[in-house]
Amino acid sequence: MFSRLIPALLAVSLPAMAAAEEPAVLNVYTHPSFAAEWGPGPAVKEAFEAQCGCSLNYTVLDSGGDILQRLRLEGSSTPADVVLGLDTGTMETARQTGLLGRHGQSLERLALPVNWDDDTFVPYDWGYFAFVYDTEQLQEPPSSLEELVKAPDDLKIIIQDPRTSTPGLGLLLWMHTVYGDEAPAKWQQLSNKILATTQSWSDGYFSLFMNGEAPMILSYSTSPAYHMAIDKTDRYQAARFNEGHYLQVEVAALVESSDNKTLAREFLDFMLTADFQRHIPLKNVMYPAVDLGDELPDVFDKLITPSEALYIDPAKVATIRRQLVNDWLDALTD
Image 1 (cartoon, rainbow, N blue to C red):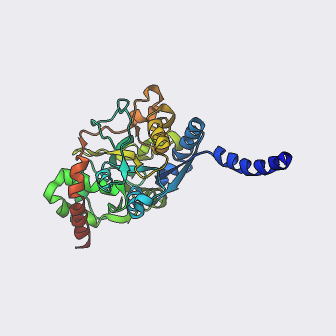
Image 2: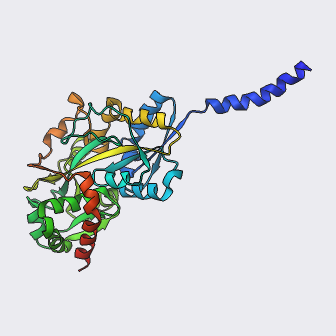
């Protein structure tokens, strides 16, 4: 009798043991520029999986704005454990969904141009918005927002939609910071120079700008670093504007409904280590959120330095965002 029970017991226990040995899966919502083959995502995945013994899975949405929209749509039933790709323009709106939890991390390692003590969002990089130009198409770029606004209409630019793209929203905030109540009128002046408004940064940069469709695109002051280090060319440069440049901090957060909170917090802690941060400068092409010392590539010394870091507190952004978008839509359709 006992001998007959052993195979039966093994048949029951082996599947259970196999299931128990399956690695935990951490689901991260992010955007294409992070998860792409050329982005930091693959290297981050390899390094974190080696540390945690888990499986890191990316769900790739079109833009930072789409991450927020998906989170709102799914609510507490979302399969996401972490969202990565929100920023200082969208994070307060994301907080107000009530779907994000406290990160529980020490932020002493951060090296940002602004003080940061937020208990929900963990920065993983930062940078300044800038208009990047093709020196083979444009030898003398505008030296200020005002020069760009007043430039001849045959100077064409590519921007991103502020409803779906964090750089697109960043430009609204940049214009608002510089012009205040005059911003809608300035948008009307600028509108005839806009060749295309793309849903995401990637769509505009790779599909249009890099194919020579326009000589200027809304991007980052750090974008030339990639071309200098990887493409070995100085062809693409960022125009330095006299009014200053708007600061963006990109962030990640824990999803409160996650069943993997311990693993999610381990990932958020991992974000602030060199094993994550060393992949930011040339793969996400932004400044790292911590001081990398000598690991920061030399090409970053060749980038423009803004005369002023322009910045609006994220809580205030949440109160003015809708009106700025509506003003922008009105200005571009008049």
